[in-house]
Length: 251
Image (cartoon, rainbow, N blue to C red; front, side, top):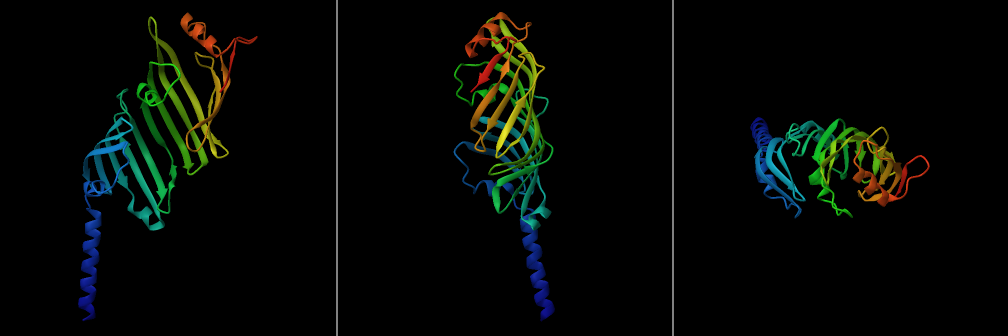
């Protein structure tokens, strides 16, 4: 009798494991109430290893999102996922890859090591209400060496780059070159530091709150002589150059 009960219990356990292991991701996504600014389509595979054809967030589409969940991390209360999305060779596409983990007991807390993200500049700037219309090109690249965030910045080492930066001028696109920012924690906030050399002669420090609102920006810049006159003229809107030719930034 005990042997029979054991076989029955083992069979039920095996069935549950099989059911969970092969649970279609589309069944889960179809039952989740997503935020209004998020839509998902073309979901295939399982909750552990699957793919979504398109995910749209605030009008920004991300294509070919793949995920691979580590089931063993669940044993210690963590959700650990390796993500891969988009085409890194497509300058107009959002693309990213790398590991992301969070705690089942605190979903606001996110950790990652070695995460890489590419964003097309024009699509990103379209999401922000800028004081002046800016037609810019190039790609933003974010490289996170270490990240521990939520609800505040605990640990952050990374870099943010603006690659092949261009801004539309009266006579065509103006080449501004490349820019690199160092990303670190500043207390509970995020610090973004840019240093020369670059074509704008830009040195800047920005502080971003945990809710991603900008708390302050300070620095200075001096456009390179190789840039067109319209760039030098536009720079005067920020103030007059000092003795060394730099214009101060204090926002």
